[in-house]
Length: 77
Image 1 (cartoon, rainbow, N blue to C red):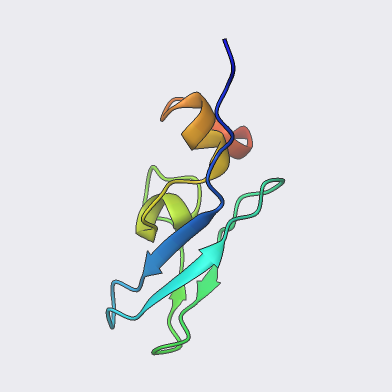
Image 2: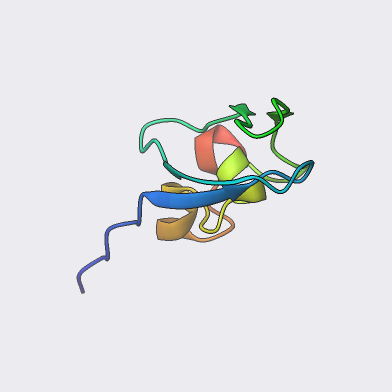
């Protein structure tokens, strides 16, 4: 059985101003902070999420895409 590689492009939407930007997700670390280029807000993951992509992105981070929500991404779990 072959495993599909994760998609690395995720579109982040700022919960404060609604600014939308597509970013490339890192494959070797979680991204805990993201500076919105629309309003300057510093985004942090919502409680229970491992990174800003899981909280505000159109796709979750690569480990979650591969292993599912119970992946324990970045040592969280």
